[in-house]
Image 1 (cartoon, one colour):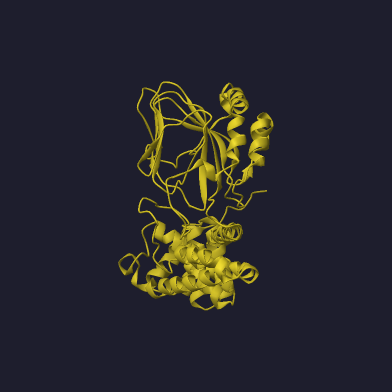
Image 2 (tube, one colour):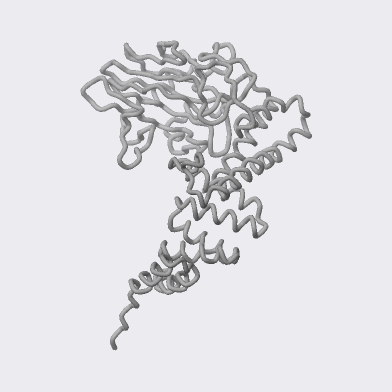
Length: 401
């Protein structure tokens, strides 16, 4: 028995394109529906059908079709914009809010919708509406997150947190306490600012330093099994290299490797089991705990000749501590233009929202234990509020993808 040949898509597609050229969107959608009958994930057909449903005010069908298209190609910011409009019309305000935000973020990351000049005339009003919707919606959403804490602790305890949130949302210009600070994500205002913090602010460092020898012995067992290390920066995006972040001053390639105990808040249980003394000490410390974000703890392994180029961190609510374990000559850290030479067994704590860099100009490997802890100038209430806020921001951003 002969199997019938599949219906060729080209005639339907050509007919649909002809309809589009004549401005007959509804007829085009009918032609492209035949394409979808044979190829349900055809992106061109999904966009034409969804757009036709949208302009017919069939917002429920349009939303379904647009969602299908975005599963195939998440970067279609015009489709995402129209999905946001459809969801708003369907009375789904939170879904519309995150969808609008995702559309704007995707477009602007590609240099689009930054001004009238970078926005097609036919989309300008819709884009401006989305911007107004996001501005008002995000402000209300994150203030609702803080409202239970405001009721519990009072306005004075929450004043700096709310000031920081308004700065994050662009409600007012952010005035850095020090012009050398350039946080990539969230700036907490109205606290003292300095590149390095005095050791007496962190009494828990005594226990860490006193265990330097034991930690170093566990480190040496890790270094003997190099395959357990991973590139700190991860794999570079296609077509890019790590040259924007790392440079080599020697004959071998630059390399910054890591042996993580925590990353983005996730605990590496296998690594903890391999280094039980180090893991137990880390578990005893007042690390920053924010879901999907912190803590970040690791052995940081800098290969000979490697220079970590100047860069800045994400937020000043937490500080970075190094416990130097193996430090050859001619290795140093520079924060805010101030150079610090590591001393084995002696912690150094700094605010990485100041531009900072590090180098190993020797022909040996340099290793420090890195961990992050709360900025001691935040109150306990502020730490609780910042945790809730940053987790909510993460959830919101995830919903917008």
